[in-house]
Amino acid sequence: MEQNDRSGRARLLASLTCDLGRTLFRARDREWTAGQILGAAESLRNMVAASDVPIGVAFAQPGWLLAALLAGWAAHRQVLIIDPGLKREAEVVRRTHPAIRIYADRGSVMDDRIALGDALAASVPATASPDWLRLPVDHEPFASLLTSASTGENKIIEKRGFQIYRQAEALASVLALREHSRVLSFVPPYHLLGFFYGLILPLVQGAETVLATELTGPAMVELLEKYRPDLVVGTATHYRFLVRAAQRPIGQPSATVYVSSGAPLDPAVAEAFAARFGTPVHDFYGSTELGGVAFRAWPAPYRGMPGVRWRIDAETSAIEVQSPWASAAQDAWLATDDAAEPAGDDGFRLLGRRDNVLKVGGKRFSSLEVEEALRTLPGVAEAAAFSYTRFGEPALAAAVEPEPGASLDETVVRAFLAERLASYKLPRSILVLARLPRGSHDKVDRAALRAIFADGGPGPRLQSRS
Image (cartoon, rainbow, N blue to C red; front, side, top):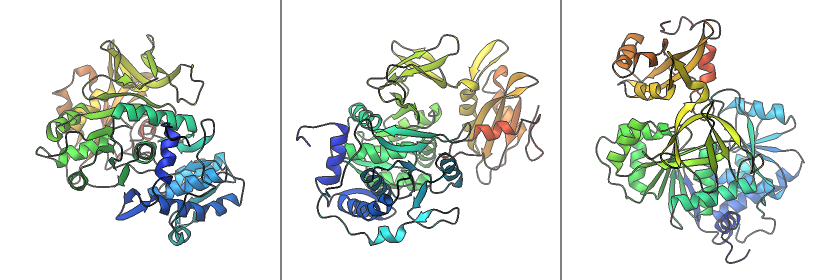
């Protein structure tokens, strides 16, 4: 490796080899050094090399996940990253790759995964960089991940080396993180957001990552105060929890960069966060298929990532993207499922998914506006607004999930919305559910919600109005 090579691949390799005693990850009161990860990869390498089929990796811990990737790359195996808590993802992968072997870092009764906890625990830390160590080059497969299934079944998306390295280089320039910084990620490493922002990007930046998932808002605030990170990675839901937990201004370093992705950030949450934490959230827009498309420091409009071009279709309002790290040809324009409108000279604002942009009474609006209003209702833990077909015409429905102990009904919800929204934006049906159905990335499963109306209306377990 050339000393002056600053490519994403070279910098990632340097994090693994330049100081084997340096801590790369902390999670669940455990630390992983580069040497420990390389030692675990050595233990896994021979197992993975024993067959020529793809491997599935259902690992919850970041150190073991990275070790499994290294072992797969050394054996020239396709590596598919799977949520260890979801049987559905494993079933999707097996339909596509019937002979696949799925490895886990702990035992599971859900299927026939191969538990490697004992082998991982017995591995010996490496004392030197192994001669078998290799990272994928630009054209080679890096890893395959599954989409969130928020609008249907999971899809397997393969990422190649250039898609990871080029995007990491672009993000490093956008976020302007210092070398050897600290990252706090609230997102698991087997989800795309956690994998890229909480695993790969920190390695490229020579950073240390603290992984802390499934926390309450107060516990998240405690970790912010304990670690005082340079970069915080979360979803829109995490920032809503943080705002609710921080009822007073929080004394955090002004240089801390807060990143949100996976779903649009609620403006009310973004405004409250900026007031209480003294800095805006950096909201990134993209998809598993396209990677990062655009970013903004709230409340500014979205602007394209370096090297990414975008345009808005005049007929459909769909945002179309030309990206240097898209899986298709780099000069191809790819239509997304999202609608947008121009904002300023070179920016845009999202209107929501195209199938959630409705035209009622000759007026067009996004269901996202309805969701944002619902989330400001006291006692609402989560909300979704979505279109469905009613008597052959598009209509809007809304579903809310109450906070524990809260009492909500359709009358209260409808009256609240009527005070805040124009009449044509009010849902035709309102559902109150103990818990909204969710996909594998904890996103609301709108396909499951729409299925309630497939036979003409909601079932008796729902409160509704038609």
